[in-house]
Image (cartoon, rainbow, N blue to C red; front, side):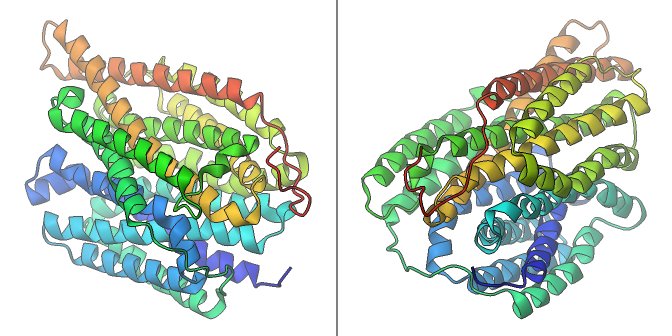
Length: 477
């Protein structure tokens, strides 16, 4: 196996990934602020997140193809130029359109960087060290979005939202320079043919589904809106055609034979259930804390920090434990913890203490840390090296799709619960009643996430350690 400067390569990818993920959530906490500054409605402001997810949903399925068309360095430089330019435009942004354009550029950068990061790790690390390396990716994927609201809240309180991006810019430039110095081309460029029909079907399919669900989560009409129904239906039809097309092609854009590997499928399902739980909880909890218990943005950010920080710190350790003991002893207890914590979350009320909520959030984040990376690494380990780009493309794409679905479902369950409560209320405009409605809605969302966790627990019983021996292991079983 070729010797790489794995530390420097990992460092440059992690710095850039961290900043990209950080700005995604730091902006979420600035939404109310942006609505006032730009004089826009909540559904317009929501586009800053929807547009980001939509761009990722369209780009991710092509990542397997792009990783084969361009060298590692070309992909890295392309993704960073897009991230840096997007961040600069956002930092200078003086109207909604400018910020929106910047978000799309940032999403393009992230859409190229994340698959590149997974693929590079699978190539430069031997299987027995992969868990620890993937653990560091876990640190970025979980810890960066977690620090976003806290640091974002601080910046908005004392400076302006522009500083979210001014803070990110120098870090991206440092990451770019480290990468330019140490990142080598780790994959072979095979120049596969580009099948335009596959590209079109994937764009309409994944884009339509992500757009439809995102739209459902924001509008007053919700699921009954014609736009929502049409885009989800059109998206699903395009996806069916996309799958049929991939199965008949000799060199598919997204190689679906990854689904022949049972542990990969189990890992994928685990990652998707974690994503659903995290996206739903992360959007509902801050809302509950601000509306239900009347806490400030900054306090909310601070309360969510310990759990997320702990998740990030433990992630590399979970990776090492995975390298040593395999996935079962982490994933199953992790899902038990998550299920129990979510059950406690269903009892939240405006009277719940700050300490209780912080403790639950810590439990949730630690549990997720025990599931996510071990299940993901174990699944990817079962694939032969030529399927790495496709395996990561499928995983990253479905994470984005599930993220959009989770957010939409959570918001609509929340709204439904609130409306139902206020409908039976004698004074629906009273602040305490709105707080109670928020509580009722939030509790319904946590029942939903708990159900997902329990289904995940049943699936986790089938997980077993993959022994990596690709010389012998050509068959999926």
